[in-house]
Image 1 (tube, rainbow, N blue to C red):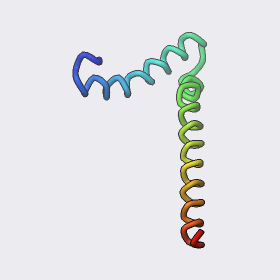
Image 2: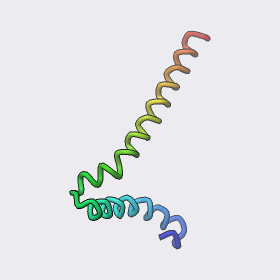
Image 3: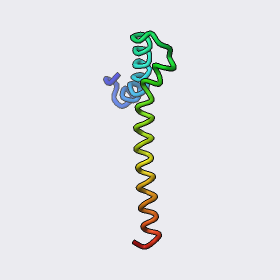
Length: 69
């Protein structure tokens, strides 16, 4: 998919997780929900933690600016 400039990257970004879910489902003999959780849960937790850190830092900066420190 990377042969097509720009469009191939977008298609691979969508198709890659689909292939991972199918591969985990078949390799582990489990259902799609568990396979999808195995693929997407690390991304959700990582992005959630980064988002939490960013919002905490943003709030600390806003509080420091509001108090004039």
